[in-house]
Image (cartoon, rainbow, N blue to C red; front, side, top):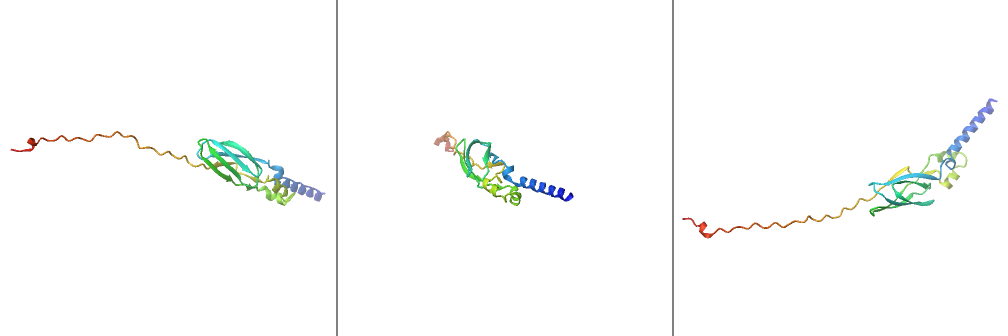
Length: 157
């Protein structure tokens, strides 16, 4: 009787660990990423990975599909500055448990639900170019005029 109870507890524990370890059952396919520009400006971005494309104003929290490839961005600020780059995808620690239990991680590797992007990301944006400032307009200062000394004033007697 004790052996049957112990086996039942061990089986329940193994199954609960297996379910917890499977990202396919525990992770939503979409993940939120809060994005903003490094200088605090507004603009628009297009985010893209092999699972989809999302166009959105910035700053925002955008829900993107999990994927094993980087989340690429193409952005433009409201004043016309442009930038491109990518946010790396990392592997969720739950994949290790999934590889040991249930399906050896096969389902997670197909669905990419074991992958994640950072919860927030700051997109570096180039600084605004300062327009060349023109030299301030100056009014020409008239040259001082010398008053000639009459020759008789210079003769000494």
